Image (cartoon, rainbow over all chains, first blue to last red; front, top):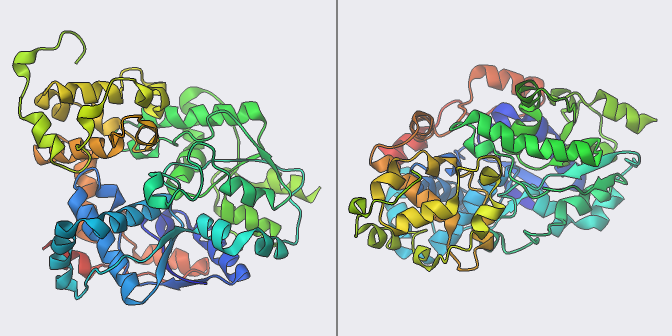
Length: 291
Length: 156
């Protein structure tokens, strides 16, 4: 199993804990993630401002992977969605493809047929599969009550993600977490957006959206939140203290990437998984695990 | 934005203009069921925000009001409305279309314009510098390029 590894912008600069843990989990499971020096931003952050420019950037990345004969694996839900959407769009829009190729010729690339684009969690769910993952688990995470946040672009728009999971009743990430022996906690508002995309436009509004979920998780008695997107992590982990002070509440809820949860169950150590870089401290959670 | 709709402000060509672009194709099929509002995470915390209202305003041809409003920028692009719309309106893509048109006409939050400039200039939202690479090396991660030549060639 071999993929061009799409890191995007946020992960290498701001979510090294996600990158570290994903590389370790991939290595353990024998997924070959190939680093690509020439990859640039997927285009997602500028789609609202200029959709054509965003498509061009996505096409550039797709063409690079295509040139190497590789499919793409992304850790970021927005990157996965943007790249998959551009590939979908360019598969039928001949005019757009011609326009893109005219620009790509400046960097010596041609966009032909898009490679497959997969989120890392989807690769684990669909391709690696429960049985193989289970065979690599060494430690039961019994005693932990973990809630899952799917986020938006991991699954939506469903048409470009081949409907691989049900957007209204998703199971993929919860099934992966359940493999570890942790109790998966269901809660109202599970499919709700983190609010991250409106952060640059209206910070308080964005924090209010994230707060709703943190309230719901506190009511459900979750020990930790598990997610698969660096933007969502910025909202729930990075901004959790800000939400606490803005609204006068306390959560102290550790937020872990799926790869950190699986990594713990694989017996990888705290530092190897970058757990020391999580903003909300995970010490108490890990002590609960040791008991 | 609330209150009586002034149809003297209506631009009869707006609808045609929208229908010819990605995201605007099926907007006329909206029958105001408000499923989009019911599932909207922004409407849930800000009653003033309503995808249905934006669609209605567009259908009335209120071009200036729609493109100048802060409203379209509050859409978080979560796609909940688009997945649930019984009329098959690509609501999230429609919002993207409105944002694209608004910025072309000079109506966009400063943060959005700055982001566009940075991404199309540097090839990344967060350019990697030597300090980042030092932290990456310390964490056992590979060093990444600190500049992107291809982005300049793509957008020159």
